[in-house]
Structures are given as C-alpha cells and as structure tokens.
Length: 164
Image (spheres, rainbow, N blue to C red):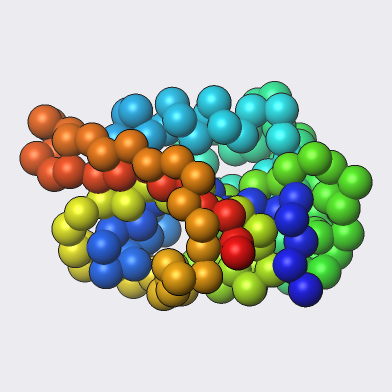
C-alpha cells in the first residue's frame, strides 16, 4: 500500500549506484543544500549505518528516526525503531517524511513511497550499494532541473517524481 506522506530523497548515478564503503560516491555542494532545504522541519527515516556516516550525527531541525536491529542501541537526538512498519507508523500523522538511506532501507520503502526526490548524476559509478531500479512509467515528473558541475566534470538533474 502506497503511503503518500513517505518520500524518498536520494542521489543516484545513472547505473543506480548510491554508495561505496559507507560513503557517498560524489560531492555536490548544491545537492547538499537542496537536501537541507527540502528536509528541514520534516522527519527523517534512516538506517543506523546512514546515521553513523553523518559527520555530526543526527541532523538538526529534523526528527531523526533510526531503524536498527540492536534493541539496546541509542543515539543522541534520535528515536530508535526496529522495523520498517514501526518507522512508517511513527510518521503516519506527519505531512511528509523523508527516507534518506541506506540501500537496504531504500529497497524496503521503495514499494510504498509516494514521492521520489532524485539527484540523478549522468554517469556510472563503481559502488557496493545500489538504489532499486526505477520504472519511470510508474512515476509522474513534477519538476526537473538539468545542471552541470564544473568541479566534478559531470552533468546531473534534480527530479521530483510522484507515483502515478
């Protein structure tokens, strides 16, 4: 069942690569600013490895919900949950909640997410974590902006998609 208030925000390569060695594949300062602008004031749902990869832990001005399978685990400024269902239940009364990774969490939320906020980098990357393949015919494009990053030397696009 689609949960319209659950959105996924992710930066992916054209081969659906999203990470390697628990780190991002590329550094796009404007994409990080976009992420902050879109998610501030909204709950974030993430796996424990994603939380551990954040340089300063829980992200400020957002409710940080961390999915873990370690019952006694606690992180500062985070709510701990133990399943996808429990995370979805925790945000059911929120206007919009954002799933921010990692790969296993994206795969489990992908079938129920109502929106995707993609940063699509127009090249392939070597990775050990991939986003589920997107069938674009199942999604309506609400917004698109095509950009080029001089420093990295590649083009990328911001896409906001809504499930049809």
